[in-house]
Image 1 (cartoon, rainbow, N blue to C red):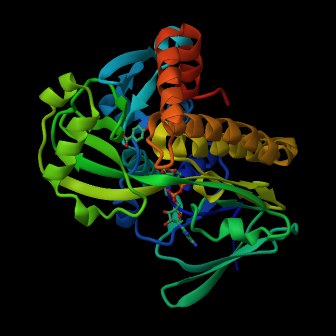
Image 2: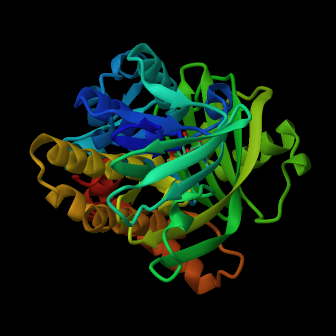
Length: 390
Ligand code: APR
Ligand code: PHB
């Protein structure tokens, strides 16, 4: 029977980052991934890394390409009523963010895991977590026609919102909180130069729009769409025309368009499950929480979970001290809720709500004007955007 110290269920960014940090600490982990490496890397993801995640990439020894190819951004643009103002991160926080595709983060982590001989099992089926509430947990899974078992000390549930880890915690123990937003994001990836050096978040009468990028020749754009809209309803030209209508004229006039190399619609939801620990099982990332992409907090909040769990595991294996593990859920959730709040606040500020009254719209515009005119309000936004301290 196989045995390891930590079984990590899920080979997305959360699981891989944890695996690499544990490797650096000499702690053995096996990653169980349902899909193939290519499939996981085929997912389009957001592109803004908080300072904390940038630091963890360095700790994990996987920041070389990010530093070479990523873009350091020290501010962002907010547009409304045809005008734009800048929130200067560096002025208010002495910190910046790194614009670098989270798909590239995942790629760098896979490459590092392979190079360091990490044990990653792909295309596993029917993963089941057993006896997580005992001192002898184990995991079974099907692969290549047979069922395998791995005994372990701890299990990290990094298998995302649709994984099995969260549901391993008895419903009687779990408390779940959810908000579903009445709109989605239609996103397009195009091999065109970004319309602006910094990101542009736009609140327009026609709905939200976001101008982002992956590199100097790869741009990522989003427009808010109806929650029941379909990507087939949107030709590339229709997308570009609508995007132009939602961003300031100066940007619309210089926008370089081109054929989409990816186009998809994502729903928006806020979700948190508590607790994030049950016995020897610890949840990280989307397995425990989801945010609307407005604040780019999905992977960045997974990163803080991974930081706390890695700290707790290192403390335990280092000197038998389990305090880090015993306080994991409380510490992780304290930061999760603050990033849920920021993502919810930013989504409410920038989107058009179908049920919105004229008064509600005035409140949005007044808050944007306050943010434009108040250094203190911009400092609060900047601190949340670059990432709250771990
Ligand atoms: N068994 C094994 N693997 C599974 C199972 C399962 N039952 N269910 C899901 N998985 C795998 C998925 O195939 C996926 O590769 O777990 C991984 C979960 O990855 P993500 O869903 O990306 O979640 P996470 O790693 O927490 O990523 C957090 O990264 O880019 C962002 O927006 C993304 O907010 C998300 C964040
Ligand atoms: C992206 O580049 O995909 C992106 C950037 C910032 C966000 C959301 C998505 O807030």
